[in-house]
Every structure is written in structure tokens, then in C-alpha cells.
Image (spheres, rainbow, N blue to C red):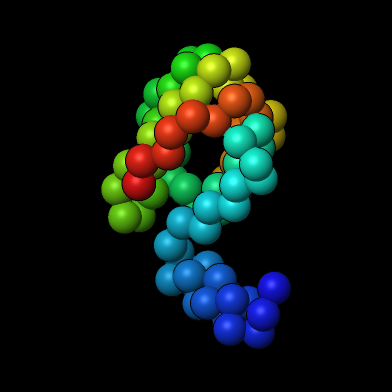
Amino acid sequence: MTNKTMFSNARDAVLGLPIITVIGNREMYIENYRSIIYYDCECIKLKTRLGMICIQGADLQIAYYDDEEIMIKGKIIHLEV
């Protein structure tokens, strides 16, 4: 990760903007989400400060979440921000 990328991520975190990290098509971390709107094995919808994030796929599951971060596992097919 370059210094520019690290600074950009730090700025986004301070502003409360969502930070999305995708690893392949099997794992996703989203920081700075506000709430889980909808959840089933094919679709997860999250509310953020900027609006809705919709993750579509197969065998989706929320592996971990707290007040600031959520980890999603499964086959991620489509991400809409």
C-alpha cells in the first residue's frame, strides 16, 4: 500500500465514508457502515452515510460485524454502491 493510498483511506475513515476491501470474490470487509438493512444468502444490503451498498452473490454470510466493520463471506457476484 502506498503512502497516498494510506492517506486516502485515513481521510475516508475520518469523514465516516465507507471503505470497502474485497479479497477475490470470496471475502469483503466494509468499514463505516451504519446498519444492516436486508440479509439473506443471496443479497446483503447495508446503509452507509452515502446511501445503500448492495452485495449480491451465493452462499453469502455475515462472518463478523460490530458497530464500525462488517465481514462478508461467500461467492460475491455483484457489488452496487
